[in-house]
Amino acid sequence: MLVLLGVLTIVALLAAILFNRMSPVVALILIPVAAALVGGFGSSTAGFMIHGITEIAPVAGMFVFAILFFGVMTDAGLLEPLLRGVIRLAGSRPSLIVPASALLALLVHLDGSGAVCFLVVIPAMLPLYDRLGMDRRILACATSLAAGVNVLPWTGPTLRSSAALKIPVMDIFRPMIGVQAAGLLFVFAACFWLGLKEERRLLAAGPTARQPAVTVGSDDKNDLKRPKLFWVNLALIIAVLGGMIFSAIPPVVLFMAGTALALLVNYPDAAQQRVRIDAHARAALLMAGVLFAAGVFTGIMTGSGMLKAMAAAAVNAVPPGAGHHIPFGLSLVAMPLSLAFDPDSFYFGVLPILAHTVQSLGGTALQTAQAALIGQMTTGFPVSPLTPATFLVAGLCRLELGAHQRFTFPFLYAASLVMSATALAFGLFPI
Image (cartoon, rainbow, N blue to C red):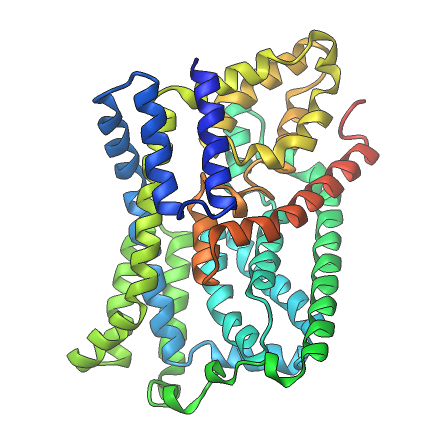
């Protein structure tokens, strides 16, 4: 019963969002609530919701203040030198701008945080895309590809797989360096193709495709620039991001303090501060609403036991004779599994059972971990409704969630399949 209910809930959620039948906030709240009531959980549903909201609250707070923080920094002109550098390197050619976006995302993602990557790269590059009239879905796709393929020893999925299976992180990661290199080659090839296609579209459309109203550095925003405070702002952003990487201070605290300091330093007048907050309040409020709704969804799915039941059913459905092929098979479906399982449920619930099955049939737990990392919440996380980063990408690019998922999913899945084939060729998986 729980398995069927869980599958129907996820299918209904994806269908409602992908086909624009409901807004993400409405779908993330009403669909799991209806499923819980149908499942007979009654008043317990409220407890599941509160637990999910409580779990997501620090993340929601971080994103709200991160949007305000980077919004103020953009207003003050901190990111303009970065834009000018990209423009000098890529000019106004989308065929170079899109790969440059991916390269920037790849470098920023070295800290292992997809959220930080998106929060830094998208606000920096979006004005350039808008100025040239480029499709924002391409920016969302390029940054998602770079962050998704960039599997590092300190990223969440790698650490979870190591902890769940008691395997040293570097034992998992080191053999996958070549696999990841193949994935990155695909990323830049795909980004070049997307950019070239967009370049041809813009040439065919003519100058009307451009959007001069949002040109970086336009007159209506010049009074907000603070070029004399560039080094102060740069030091502040380095302190905030460095604190996230090298300290135990919660990110929400760092972004709250960073936002307050950024406002005080750049716009010391209280009226100016209110105007700058108002300018970014809509994006922050929308993000907070979606994230709390996502907390409702994950809280109900976890508290009701639907995710756990689905995990057990998925493992039990594997025929005994197919156990030898589990690692390669898992690598083929790991990316779309991100749409059904959050990282904790998969890596701490499903992965150990799969690894035990593989070991009992002559394989290794290491192969199972590597197969999972090819897609489960790596290439899959930027489009999964179970991770806040998906909503962040769509929100920062000002895209409908379904539009982002429909456009980006095929490229992320293709990257996952390229890495799976490379791993097979390198002998990581038996077949």
